Image (tube, rainbow, N blue to C red):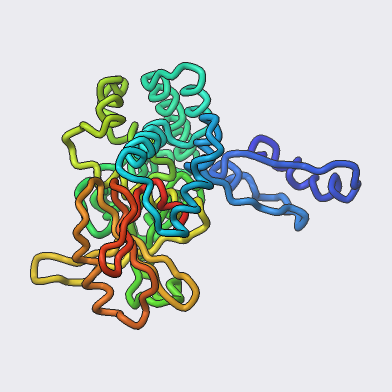
Length: 345
């Protein structure tokens, strides 16, 4: 629709004609730039779209049975066992590498070649960067987007845009961030100052984390300095043998899974001592209670931040979750959930 704004306006009369239904698509960034001088028809219903989620990825792989089974097991709090858990984690890591962009998934189905998939994802990222330049010809929005993996890998409790692009006035930076948010290429998680069921009531929009909307694109961005991401690197990631700390990749994945399941993203940090903070990675509002989530990239199952949070706000807590890579089990009051179930919580 960004190529022909007048066609968007004409939808009003086409709908009134009554003979057909219409679906409009286009780049959100470009559409936003092409609304001057046209009337947005009230007949237009907007649908929020995301990359393919894990269940849809399984469908593409010809597997319609896994996710319904996982739902049943989560409801019963029953484990698959170690062997089946390893198989499902490998399937999830393949999803992390390929991602949920339809072109990347199609490339994998056609070639089974992760290098070819990486090449396709680079094309998508370059299209994003080109689209950002339609709003900001200096390339600063693209730099903010490209910096997400490095910022997350540092383990900082917030995204610092002024450390990426310097000398930008506050009002202009807000414009850049709004453009990123509206583009749907990223997921924002906002810090809350007083965690309670009405999470938006205490959100601090000046303090946030940024996640790439698709974790497959995040993996490619993280290794952007190479002309392509070598198959050996993908093979090691797929086999869970890469020595680098991949906690930030799993955190991005969980953010994507929660967001595509319809959740807004919030987190909470508070001082542990003079030099360290506690941090709850994500907060879900369920009924009259909060459900805190902590994300680990491996089998490590300690949950000091979760425990401290639940001690700080005992009357507000419902279920508490640790997302990690081993099978589902209970640890006192904390449910340890394998990462492939995160979108089902």
